[in-house]
Length: 279
Image 1 (cartoon, rainbow, N blue to C red):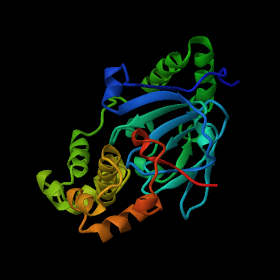
Image 2: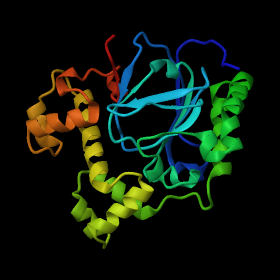
Image 3: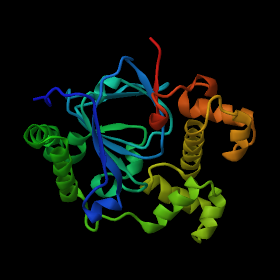
Image 4: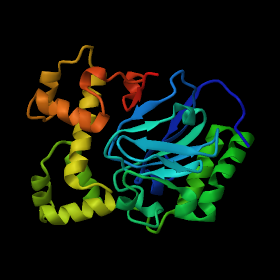
């Protein structure tokens, strides 16, 4: 079964269930077709749940790594580098963007075990994961995208461990790192050591704190680039975003995007983590 043919659509909502609001930043449905056949997906430090309603398949190819392939419902773990994806997978997709430490209550394994991975929901949830795509297709056919999102909320509430709440200390860690507070200072504020902080972050954020801080600094840079007028002043942005100098910014940009700052041309300023590739 496939969703009915319809014009381009993008629907983004916040979870209506209070228990999910602590774990999920947003969820949505998108039905869009693109002229390009490949694009870079840039790392955010967060995890997503994806369901491809157009085809029962998902793929992601991290640069310099082997291709990841699953059936059409999967968890995309926190990625620490860029990956090449097929934009055709966005022809009809339901997605969930987890907050920091948000995916933990829904997973049978630590978040760190799905870092840089595309993990099929059938493997993670068993029969419930294997049939989720069909349940969402039936919901779309019966009541449209909003019905599918309501169905997904119900499934997530059923799957979440009790109580479905992230560790408030780890949420604070993520917030401080996102603001650019040094890792050692974050550890001091929490009354622990950098080594203990690293263990907790790897288990609950899925990413070590220094790597998470680098990815979030990169995201702060992209927000500044996409909010300003071209061409960007990279030297000024390097200072404002916490890089040592412009050379350091370029090095980190290559590490997280696989391209130079000058080659960065996203689909749109609001879609700064999707960069069409030529060819």
